[in-house]
Length: 272
Image (cartoon, rainbow, N blue to C red):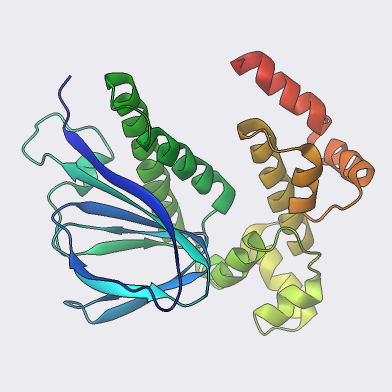
């Protein structure tokens, strides 16, 4: 098997203000994923400082000099180092898109945290398995999927209308607070608008009322956890702001057309 990508260190750790990152300059790619808290990274050649609040990531290309650290106690981040053989002629996407680039970085913010974190956590677990051909294939597939999703999300962000871009920080805030009950007034306050003006502008941007948009985000998150994890349904309900499990069941069936239990059972019957 030709290994056009060498999978190197993949690890996750906690940071606080006393544990710095770098300064360092890697000879390979580094996918830095923020699981919890906020980190800052300073890229010296570009004199740029960025902040990354969970869930977010930055893909750092080879020969990029940087340093940084955590802005919160007990922050969590993972790094995934990998090296692409830029001389290979048959590199598939997404590796072909990033091979050969040096001294730069790409930031991915306002991510759907549970989905990306699920992929990263699976890749982390596999990195501790014996390095067989099967494990390598699985790890490479996960890395490829993560990179494809990140690139697609960046392309999608570039296609957003000016009206939609006005609400990027709001969307990220909502994603990080799916467990909360957030009303129109709270959303409007977050973007410094009156409630009536906010409601009109948001609907113009997304063709959906803001409270319905937030509701969809919540249940999309619940469906993902039901399909991709073994998390107890009661805990999934809590993650999107339902303390009463019967209320969650009724709302879920109204939105999704089935019950959480049936959706999970159907997933298990398909994939074993």
